[in-house]
Image (cartoon, rainbow, N blue to C red; front, side, top):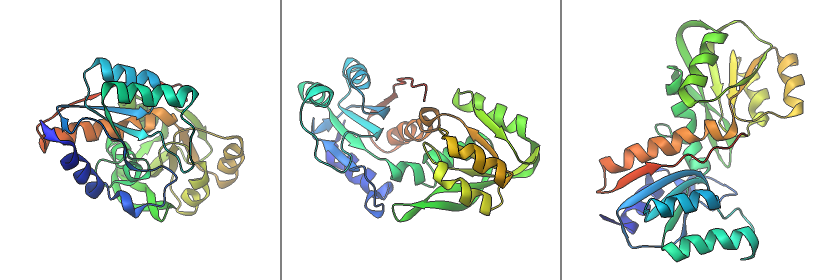
Length: 251
């Protein structure tokens, strides 16, 4: 058992949440039990996820996509149901959006580089005042198909690939989630493969004209890894149990 404040103070500092100009309200969003025994990790602040967390006897939930996004929200409809579930069960909710994308050890992008056995050599794709994406390198060139197979196996996805670049890959730019905006910078940095989550129409033409390979591995799939890593990390520091609950999303 650990005091909620000790956990949230640690997360605020470790994830450096105040360093980002984020449209997510990062940090503690809902204040529940003051003593935490079990923490559940979710990617999304969904009602299904909250109910599953309550069923698992969670005292605290940590999410990547929280409830509060920069503008006031009325306590009605599905938002009310989500909040009511947390309050009825006295569960705290903590959100870490860009800070969890960008963290150099447990972040989504660092974990994706680890998943394909590539070494991070630089950071790029500034958003909210900080670079959130990483550039990673293999020790030697690898076939594009081999890299994609390894990625898909590691994060349980099926990537959609635009193979407009070289067949042999050595450098990879990685920005999880919805990051097509970073594709031109990835091309400028001359990476052989750009990995992100979800596609958009303009990215097809940009990838072809930049002669760059792009893998869309799924917004949800590319952002499970940071929460999972955080769930593995917290029990090494605090007397808590942790559990990642998968609420699959096809996007």
